Length: 115
Length: 109
Image (tube, rainbow over all chains, first blue to last red; front, side, top):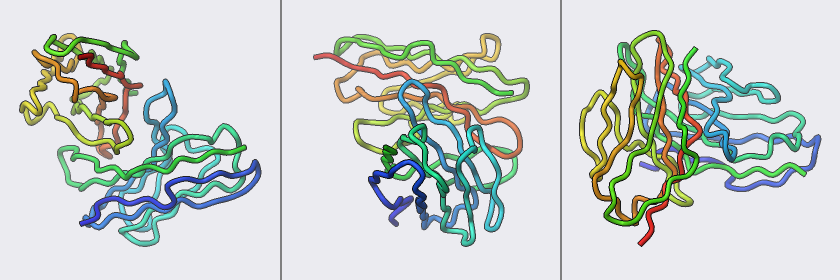
C-alpha cells in the first residue's frame, strides 16, 4: 500500500495564480483532512471530509476550496494564491467509527511558495 | 472550544538524560489525546495515544485529567529522538484533531 500520497511535492506560484493539490489514499478511509504547517503555528486544519461528496470547514478555510468526488481523493484548491498561503500542506486520512478517534495517516507534504 | 498548549518551542537535552515534553489541554468533555512525531524531512506519524497506555520507543504519556495534561516522557533520551513533537486532542463526534504548536527536541551527543 502506498498509504497517503500528495501531488505535487513542490510548487512556486505567483500571486493571483490558481492551483490544485491532490491527495490520494488507498486505505479505504472515510475521513480525509487538509492541514497547513507554518513555523511556530503547528498544524492547522483547513478543510476536512467525513465521506465521499461531503466537506466541511476547519480552522483556517479562507482562500481555499476542496472537493471529495471520489472516496480515495481529496483535492485542495487555491483560486487566487496570496503570499500568506506560502506553507507546507499536509493531507491526512483516518478510519471512521463511532465512539473513538482513530490514528490519522499523513502524506509527505507539499511545499508551496507564493511570490 | 478545544485547545492544546505546548509551552516549549525548543527543548535541548544531552543523550542519556531524561526528557519531558509538556502538553496541556482545554476541553469540556472527555478528550482523546495523542502524540505525533515528525523526524527531519519525514511525514508526521503517530507516536502514542492515551487510550492505548503503551510505551513506544521508550516514550510514555499519562493523561492527567485533574491537571488537564498529557506530558510525554522518556527516562533516557537518544540522539535519534531528535524531532518535532506535536500533542493533539480529539473531542466531539467528528474526531477532528487540534494540534499544539509543537516542541522541537534536540538530543545532543
